[in-house]
Image (cartoon, rainbow, N blue to C red; front, side):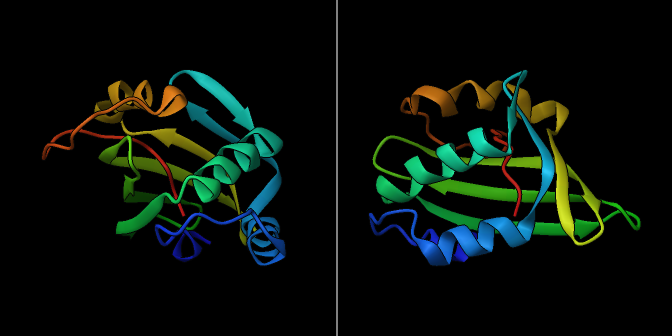
Length: 129
């Protein structure tokens, strides 16, 4: 899905929606800045990213066991450029839950308002593919 976020503003179209539905479990929860986002709320966040021309790059993907992984993501648009890490839980072939890495929690605060925040080696957000 995140390969479709290439930095070009676009609507969250049928192709994105199809990829979204294939990737996220019906009970998906993304714990962003201590505020859990359900699947519909996460779709809205990704819709905003698509419309604003956000670029999302997968920097790291490491399988931890049969149902857990860690990921590193870079999110770039005209307002933000952040790098961060998350832990995810898989159910079947879909993402069930995303949690920020402990060091990533401070960067979650940058995402809701999309405030300016320059990435440093140890700055983090948590978004997973």
